[in-house]
Image (tube, rainbow, N blue to C red):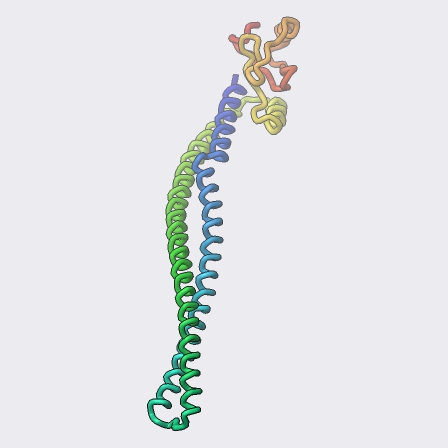
Length: 238
């Protein structure tokens, strides 16, 4: 009967370890971690795109300003009267017109880059907000796992503490067999109840029941199906 007490404690410990390894909160953490990685990557890519566009915009700004500076200089020369030749004036006016067209093209390109940059920055902002939200949810989920794990660990420690005195009085050879079987199948013994193995739920045949009935009380009985030690009680149906 003492072996049944150990079985019950080991079964509880097994269930607790299984619960600890398969916490629903842990699945939530894993899902959020995967989502965080995906969003982290998206944020990184969006920032690279934004930074590239910022460099393009700076170059576009510089190009526009350079052409405008040249136009202002040429216009100032014309306005100052420094150019007196009609041919040179005609050439200068033609150059100014060319510069005006160039400025218009560059400003259109500059505007297009600004629009792209605005969209890229909006995407970065949106993804960063999503990442912050995921981080908040992840922190809550991790805390939940920690709390539940601590509860299970406390309960498991109590079960293991009960197990030590429960082992007292069990013969060493029987305990060694039980331990070896438990290493293979979780719990190495089960109650023989109503002629049925409590481990695999196999109904023992009449011949086996008859054989077991004739054995000494301290002789070890094994289930033919699952090999667990069968613990006989008043409920065994012998």
